[in-house]
Image (cartoon, rainbow, N blue to C red; front, side):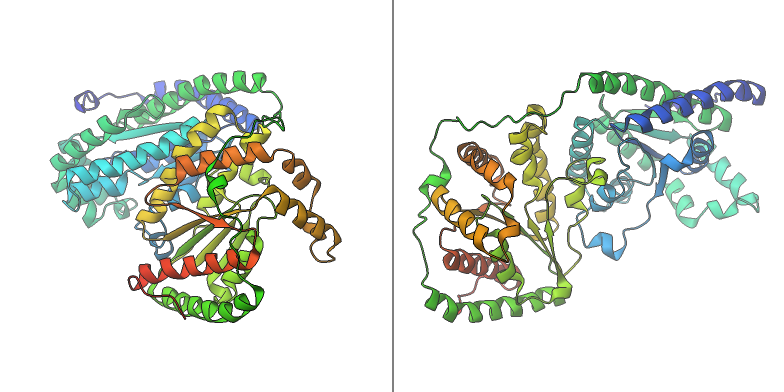
Amino acid sequence: MFDAAELGQRVSQREFKEREVQLRTKLLTLQYRTHELARFPVLIDFAGVEGAGKATTINMLNMWMDPRFIRTIGYQKPTRAEMARPRFWRYWRDMPPKGGIGLFLSGRYSRPLLSRVYGDIDEPEFDNRLSEIIRFENALVDDGALILKFWMHLGRTQQEERLKELEADPLRSYQVSEEDWKNHEHYDDFVAAAEHLITRTNRSAASWHIVEGGNENYRHLRVGEIIAAELSRHLEVQERKAAEDRPPTRVASPDMPKVDTVFDALDLSLSVPKSDYKKKVPAVQARLGELGRKAQAEGQSTVLVFEGPDAGGKGGAIRRTVWSLDARTYRVFQFAAPTDEERAHHYLWRFWRHLPRAGSVSVFDRSWYGRVLVERAEGFATEDEWRRAYNEINDFERQIVDHGILLLKFWMHIDKDEQLKRFKKREKSPYKHWKLTDEDWRNRELWEAYKQYGQDIIQYTSTKKAPWILVEANNKPYARLKVLQTVIDHLQEKLDGPAGRPA
């Protein structure tokens, strides 16, 4: 695979200067068009053998283009904050906005490659890690991102000569470490693992480009010209799509026929007398507080998701759940229409960034399911976008659970009559009237549509690792106790194994 990158190709200084002027002009023009269109991000990854010139080529790209719209990120070993979240948290966190360019060193491929070379993971696990990367890249590409990946290559002898040359230069000797020489000793293992990595992850939407790194002039021009060609092609496609875009129109209809759903099987008459609720809730909240303190001490993180019809009791259940927790250990995030910054990223970006640190709790009042509920109903997401979102959401949640975070998803359900009763009560309440909006009444007209979309959510995203918990919420005391007890049961099991309920 790498023979063609060991030919000793060179570009003279004179030829370099001639080609550089044209290339720089083209790159700047394309960069400004990309920034102005603001329709897709550009992710450019640099991997390869040590000494092949990855960092210097990145410096050249920053010089050729406008660095105000470029972010260069070089990853080190994960920090404590990064280790507390799923592996891809830091890559989502550092995602460039639409219209921006991200240049990445030692990115998502680095740790799997090193782990495979040094035997920390076997080949099946290596493939699992590569599959994880492929799913990540597919989600971004499907959303319009341009992903370019460069493997900067040197032959074994070339690499040895380059490392010695750098070591002998007082101004550049810091660039060579003991780890670089250790990796050189495993050169053949690196090449074998890299061949497998490139073959496995070389896809048309996120392709690899192998670049010979021996001659600096050749390397810079080759990388720049590939970026220019791919960016030009991608811009043409995206500009054409932008010209064809139409304003979103509501897709859901008030005339949708009534069909049976999983919600129709719920017994919404379940209730708890207020007197019993007042007796039980202090003990339940005290138990949750005890478990919360233990979870904090042991670094056990929790994510709670609340969805369901408007006025379904999400806010009330959340307040009772966090009541006995240390306020420094939890955050409640309420999501409505995305901000300008959030719209400039993949729709999952704003949720990835709020995953909790070790021992903390993140509560989501509305969540990533907006893509397949409100955005589907209002036409903000195309059919292709909301249909593929089910798999993207399942992958997101699988990463959360596989990292050891406790994920609980509550669907707070009420019937249409109960919703109307609560709406009218809110209208008259001096401290709740602000919760009732014109949008709530508008959404009520689409009751059957939203119920069917909810049915799809349960059907496609209630998985073994992240099942939905349906809460019969017509009676608020019953719903709140069920949420509290469910959190206790799962957190207890996560920390100590199954245990009985408080008396």
